[in-house]
Length: 141
Image 1 (cartoon, rainbow, N blue to C red):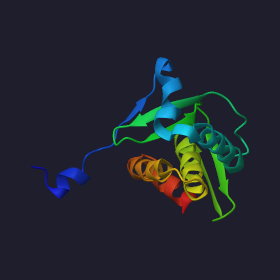
Image 2 (tube, rainbow, N blue to C red):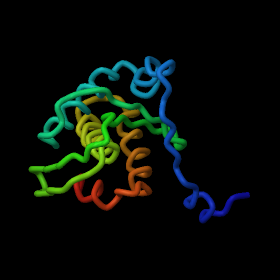
Image 3 (cartoon, rainbow, N blue to C red):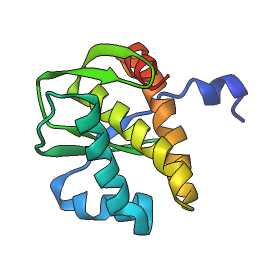
């Protein structure tokens, strides 16, 4: 039997989704709201970073059942959040997580899809372990 300490110490892993599985990802995680979620993520990324100009996004599935997507880029993105005054720079991966968290939070209040709120919490748990956790959390605070 696992103790509570064992359960909380398990690392959440991210697996890059291969091309042959991409079409199933959004429907599996968000059902009928899949396009709404995808559009909201792109919109929040545009709002958060003036450097973002579109492009290919990488999909990730998390070992806790979560999902996120991030721009495929080696560049770092300046991120500005009007609502809390955050200004900083982060990797494309961290910027993608941040955009996903903003989109999922926003949509959790706009839709009747409980999976969206659940995915916010699953992704936030992963973000807490990310190497850029302090920047991500400051941005979404």
